Length: 263
Image (spheres, helix red, strand yellow):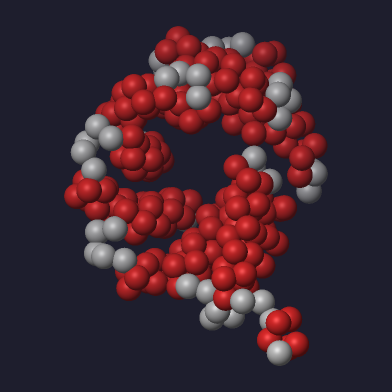
């Protein structure tokens, strides 16, 4: 009886997995993948004791795929993502939105590997799944529109990318308004597109809104604002405002080095 009492129950182990993943997701939301990694890996190791549900193991695998992708460990990310996807296809019905979400992550991994045709294939599959259970104007469609738009930008298909971004902007503004972090992040992505198109006034308008929201939430020197400073710096450089561009480049690099070191 004493041994049995000392052994964690299945429910307790599942709760521990979820708690570890929840903590890891908080770190990932703030771009702190170094702190998130041991928590996510521990959650998976605990889940793979076979004493928790397969759906929990799936969640651990996919969280780890997302983490590795952001660390640049693309082969590891792909392996974890495909393993999680395979499990999801046995656990859930054929067109379950969870499968679409995992396909979106796999598409982003392929994109980072410059495997653009494969990325578009899985993103199209994800979009098709979502369209079976959601209307075109539902906010749940936005992450998939953004993912396809980002891929199209990588491929230099800027006009087509803008169409997807415009759909995402319309839905996001309608659902959340301009002062949410999610909206601000989308504004930043569209500003990057406008910069590539030479539409600097429109780009500046959006990126300044992004910066205002991010500074309010993160503070004025947070490393997560670095991509925004880099976008503004690129606009300045394209406009031959070289002093301002250099200052912003240095500000972005300094914030990242302060967080992660300069290795």
